Each structure stands twice: as structure tokens, then as C-alpha cells.
Length: 480
Image (cartoon, rainbow, N blue to C red; front, side, top):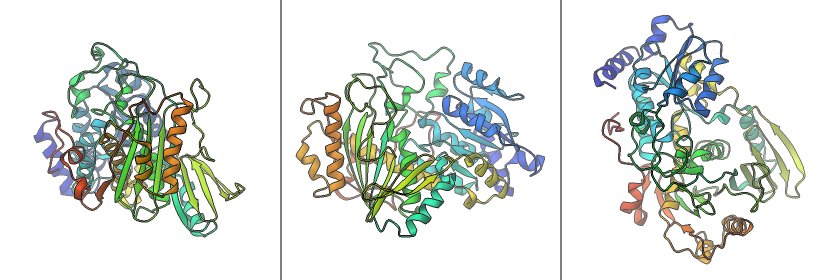
């Protein structure tokens, strides 16, 4: 993107600081024109989602894969396609962008858009690392942009109902929270020679801020999730939805980051080209209510293929809130409260966040960031929880001792159940824990205000994982 072009947009935005340049020119009551950056499964789905809103127009579909961009554009009459996101951001007729690229592009694309006077809807995790997430928040504030995170459960009426129920005291005081992501996946394969990018992909633009590294997976698209250079593993993929539910419902957004975190796990059974763990367990010390989290991509037991959920404990929900007199267990769009004998006390039914797109468009018109259900700073924190869990895992050594793992959070039963569940899961998949390459990271001390590690945890290795090295021409700036 030409810097002079970005400056022109920034100056125009600062001069009026009300609506985007195109929406100002056409009138506040006219349709909002949207550009979609990244139109794979998530991005294409978002375009269909927004197209149902009467005051939205699908103007441009952008993807580094030219074939994919053109194919999605054909579904929306009057839209055009491009492979270059800078053309979308520079387009004076675009009011807002919806970013569904691979994770490594989320922040830089959103920052460029904010600088150009565009509002932004950005998918989770809203960042590839904690440092750049803060830079996006700074950009949203500086350029007075409406920036919405893609954790759509925030727009589900169920969450307000659940908060009121917890406040009623029907279940008593909250004791701890258990978060689960049990989604079965398979191997991404392993090549002996690097995977060449597809001929229809502008690989330089696809890489953007990421480093140019050889790829040994079999498929180019989607499986970037499991490579640290471009993705954040399952914890970064599904995790932000779950940590965001926890922060919103349990902590009411009053806890930004945990004060301590530790994690363990590994990548087992597949022997593929992936790097992130397929079995991962995390402890978050918030200073108040403790949180434990389990992420498993292997099936309930070896050889099983039915269902998407590895059922453990007493729930299939990904949010379990244990209270003195019972617990809540739920997932996207529904859940139930139980007493301690397992009897249903109350059922909850939501819509999964169907109104999230509508919420974003409404905030674009009101120009009140408080109208956003998933305003960018809160989703920055929810994404950062996942980054911290990944860092804690990545800092783990090659030696693993089960007793040492149990002692990481000594005498705390939910943690002990988490570690026991990890070993039970390995045994069910016929994985010998004594021979498996299991990692157990240190207990990291976190300074939530500074968004960094502190004390003995502030090692060069740990601090380096809070940010990344960017490729020339695609650098997230220190000063946005």
C-alpha cells in the first residue's frame, strides 16, 4: 500500500471523525459497502451472512488465491474480485472491511484499514501475537474506528440471561471454570519436499507479515492453522470463542489477562507436518476464580470416528461454570444449569450470535464504540489468553514427569483432574505416555497491565514469543 494513499485517508478520517469517507459522501442512510479480505470457508460464509442485511452491499471479494476470489464474487451480483487487499483498503467506495485471512494477516490488514478510515470486522483470533493485538487496539482508538471482533456469541441473548441467572445466586458462589474444546481432527500429512504454493495464489501477498518458510504439509489452504508461522493451533482457532465466553459471562470483562499461566501437551499419533499440539491442557490463575482448559483433537478412543466431541466429565459443553450448589454447562447457542446431583435446574437457548453482523453495522451508523458487542479491546484480551496458553506450552522442555505436572498447581483438584484426563485420553488412543514427546511448560508470571511476563518468567525466550519478526514491506508499526 502506498504510504501517501494511507496518509490521505488518515487525514480525511481525522478531519471529520464521524463516518468513513464513502459513507459520508453518499449519505448516512445509504447502504454500507463492504470489502471482504480472505474469502475461504470463514470469509465466504461471512459474505453470505452480511448479504442478508438490507443496508449492506457486498462490494469486493479479495483473496490471494485469484480462483477463490473470483468464484466467491460470482455469488454476489454487482461485486468484483481482486487478489490484493491493498486495493480494497485504498478503495474510496468501501466503508468497512471484513477480515477472514489466515491469522498472521489479521492485525496488519486491520491496522491498514483503520489508517485508511475504514471500519473493521476482524475474525478471531484478532491477532497472531499479543503485542500486535495491542497495536490494533491503539489504531482503533487513534483513528476512531468501529472495530468488531468475530466472537459472535457476544451477540447471543443467552449470555445476558446466563449472567442474570448467575447473579441470582441460584447456584451459589462460582468456584472454578472448566473450558473444553473437543473437536476431532486428522493428520495434515507430511511431505519429503516443500509444498509449492498453488499457481493461482499470489504467494508474496499470502505470506504478508509471515516469514517465508518451507511447508511440509500436504494441503496449502486451511492447514496453515497448525504451523506457528501462520497460525495458532487449536487453542488459537477455537479457543478465543471459549475464553471470550468465560471472560464475558464469568468475569464480566473485569479480568483482562491472567496473572499466571502454565500448560502442557503435545502432538501425538499423526507424525505429520504440523507443529501445534493436538492435545493441550492449560491453567489460568486470574487472581479470583481459577480457570482450567482442555483442548483435544484426538477421538474419544482410538478407532472411533463418530461425532465431533470427546465427552469428558459430565458435559459436552465448552463452558462449565462450577458453583457451590451446582454448575452450568453449555456451548454455542444453548446450555443448562444443574444441581450437584445432576438434576436440570434451568435450560438456556440462544441463537449462537445471529445478530453479530447487524450489531457491527448498527455501530457503524451510531459511531459509538460502546454499541459494539465485541469491541476490539475485549477480544484482544480473549485472544491473548490463547496466545499465553500457547507460549506456556511452547516453552516446555523435552522431559516430562507426571508427578511434576500434578505439582504445577499443587493440591488443586480441577488441575489434577485436568492432568489425569490428559493421561486417560492418551491411554484411550493407545499412546504410551512414557515414550510420547510430552511438553510441560513453566508457571509463567504475567503483568496484565503491561501485557508482558514479569520476574523470573521474563526470559528472552518467553518475551520473544509475545511478538514476531515481520517481513519487509509487511511490518506492524511500533507507532500506528
